[in-house]
Image (tube, helix red, strand yellow):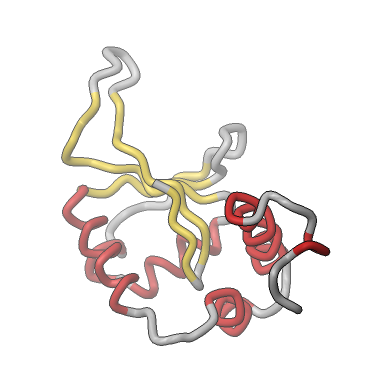
Length: 129
C-alpha cells in the first residue's frame, strides 16, 4: 500500500521472514524514502508509533523503516483519514512541509496519474488551468 499524506510518503507491506519467506500477517513495515516523514508520522501518532525504532536502510529502495503491529498501522491509517480537514491535498502538504522535494514530487505524481483519466497532452485537457 502506498500512502501519500501531508506529512509524507509511505509504502506499507507485510513483514516476511528472510529465511522462510513466510508472511507475518500481524506485522507491517512502514517504509519511507525520507526519515523526516517517519519522524513526522511518529509525532502525529505517538500512541501508536513512538515505541517503534526507525531503522536506516540506506542501500535498500526505502531508506528508512518502522516495524509495527498491523493493529497499530490500522489505527494510524484511520487517524490519517480522520485528519482530512483540508480542501487541497498538495497545498496542505506544502503548508505542513514548506516548498521542496516532497511537494514537487506530489505535483509530478498528480500529472502522471492524470494521464490515466485523460490520456492526452496537457494542452488537450477539458478545462483551463
